[in-house]
Every structure is written in C-alpha cells, then in structure tokens.
Image 1 (tube, rainbow, N blue to C red):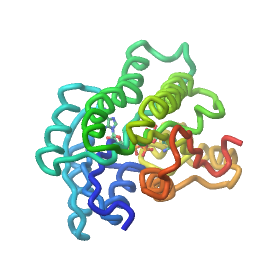
Image 2 (cartoon, helix red, strand yellow):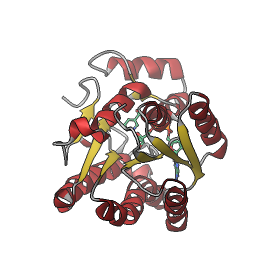
Image 3 (spheres, helix red, strand yellow):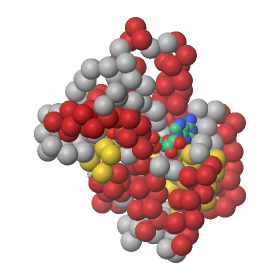
Length: 252
Ligand SMILES: NC(=O)c1ccc[n+]([C@@H]2O[C@H](COP(=O)([O-])OP(=O)(O)OC[C@H]3O[C@@H](n4cnc5c(N)ncnc54)[C@H](O)[C@@H]3O)[C@@H](O)[C@H]2O)c1
C-alpha cells in the first residue's frame, strides 16, 4: 500500500476526479479527509469507502471560504493529528468567450479554482513544515497548456494554478514539501456530462468533443486518480514543480 498511514485531504471529493481519487487513496491505505460542498454525494462517497474497510472523514465546506477551510483543518487535526497530502482538486468550469463572462462569474471562478488553493496551502504548509515535509497536488487543466475556444476565464484560472504550483515547488523544496499539478484532458465526469447536456444536441456535441481527442475517447476519472496517486506517493519523491499532462495527447 503506497499511502499507508498517510492522511490526505482531497477537495471536490464528492464527484468525478476527486471521488475516484478518494476511493483509490483509501484503497492504498490513506486516511482520507473528503471535502466538498455537496453534502449528500459526499456522504455517499464516504460510506462507500467505509464499506470496503477504508477510513474517511467527510467535511462539508465551500473551499473558497476561509472560515470553512479552517474548519476542515481543525477537524482533520482533531481526528488524524497530521496532514501528509493535500490534493486541491475542487473546481468549476465557466464557459464562453471573455465578453460573455460577467464580473461575478470571473470572481467566482477565481475564488473556487485559485483562491481556494491559497487558503488551503496557507493553512497546511506550517503543519507540513513542523512534521518535516508533505506533498501538495493541484488540479490544473490541459487547456492551460493548449488553448481551446470558449474557455478564457477557466484557462486563466488553470494557468494561475500552474504558476502557483511551480513557484511554491521552488519556495518549499528545502522544507521537503513537493508541489505538483495535474493537467487532465477531457474526462468523463459529472461536470463534462453537464456541459454536454447544455448543448442543443448533446449527442452531437459528444461526437464533436470526441472527434477532437487524438485517442478518439474521453479519459476516465480513475485514470486521472492513478496519475494523482503516483504524484503524491513516495514513487515520485524526485518529482516537484511539474505540470503533468494526462490528456490522451490533447495538448501535444
Ligand atoms: N472533467 C474534465 O474534463 C476536467 C478536465 C481538466 C481539468 N478538470 C478539473 O478537475 C477538477 C475536478 O473536476 P471534475 O471533472 O471531477 O468535476 P466534477 O464537477 O465532477 O466534480 C467537482 C467537485 O467539486 C465540488 N465543488 C465545486 N465547487 C466547490 C466548492 N466551492 N467547494 C467545495 N467543493 C466544490 C463539486 O461539488 C463536485 O463534487 C476540477 O478542478 C476541474 O477543473 C476537469
């Protein structure tokens, strides 16, 4: 078990990539702190992990709110007394060109996709320093490596995640804290299904999206979780500051 005795906070853990990672990290022996805004789905994921003998603490929180992030940390320390892994994964996908993006949508995307990482890292890094090290993984996106149409705001948030990751990786390298980010391509998760459903002809939209994929298929949440597991595990001890594309060749 790659993550035996490690405590891992995972945000956006109630669905998609976060839920697959929570299940996989727990199977690999981690004590998982599953964080999400969706209480009902979060309880389901946490129960599923418990049913197969894993350990999971579910904490409902909006990751963009400081007091709620602080509550996640308080609950984690009360229950597990340490944080070895922080997986900042929660995110939203605003679509449309810049002129169709309202200031409110822009601020919300920046708060959930970027500020949340500042809030969690700010709270967790002092704990990791005292413990002698740790691992941080952030979810960026392949769109920050190769632009697509109608994603200006989203791409800006994810490019910020890559910059934050690289900068923090350098700043904390001598504290034994590794910081990396994932750049997933198009992955079949509730978020993608919702976006396809918003098209006048969702089946046609699905075909068009798939036609753009070099592998002619979407990725799965489990495939992204496997990459996340590698990056947070001791196997990746010499890896820091990378923007790891896992996208079926989309960003080539
Ligand atoms: N699915 C893709 O194609 C894809 C591609 C590249 C990057 N990503 C990124 O991967 C991450 C996960 O995406 P997914 O596709 O699994 O999405 P998803 O919508 O299936 O799951 C995201 C989870 O985050 C939670 N969440 C949203 N806002 C929150 C908030 N303010 N506080 C706490 N939780 C919140 C949601 O409730 C949901 O459970 C996101 O950062 C996304 O940008 C996804």
